[in-house]
Image (cartoon, rainbow, N blue to C red):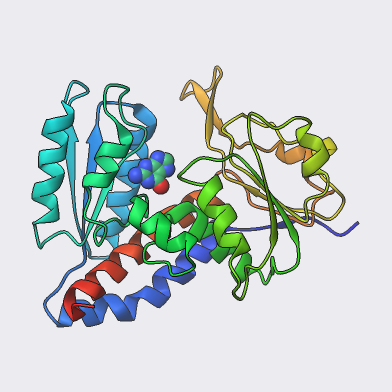
Length: 295
Ligand code: GUN
């Protein structure tokens, strides 16, 4: 069997940044520097790392970003009033509230307080509704990044059976909608498997393209897939060990087990992760363009 192709999010994201540069330059020459406000509540180490990588990328590209760090005990009212201020602050074209939030905060209330025109995460019900209607405004970054990886490697989901493992509002559900849209590089037959699915391997073994987004370390093994499947691994799981960091990052797919059986696989790290950040930048540039043109 041919060697499994590695779907490099590093390569594809660099391609995205290169093609965004002209749009960024144009915005800046009209006096608008695309800006992102990242809101981080509490001190979850993984969320800290993600927000830092996002804002670092904005800085590298000469874009504007500010991180608003709030204590774990922050109240819902306080957070909503901060978001309302950001909605009215023209320096920020995009607002991101890092998930998950502490348990005492209602995620829906917080997400719905972000202006849909600044909702670069695409989590607001208005944006999810527009996506479902096939008229997307902001598409959630991880699903959008997965579609972009497939397109870059000319893996066309049209007519294929795509099985999505996981129904989160951040990845699984919006991805299943994107995959089934009647448009180029979508148009797939989609199945979503989740914690209520009886006999997950029955479905995953039928997948031409399998997306693993359930947050269970190395859940998908060679027994789950058919020969020649394309595997996208969305998981970033910290597994504690005696390494220097005290943990190792692993995906939802057991890489060594499927390597050689799959046609292509996205690695962890270096697969979907860099694409999420690239799509956040792209969505923020889009938001800034809408702000400037008033469309
Ligand atoms: N938590 C995990 N993924 C994401 C994401 O794409 N955006 C936000 N805001 N939080 C997340």
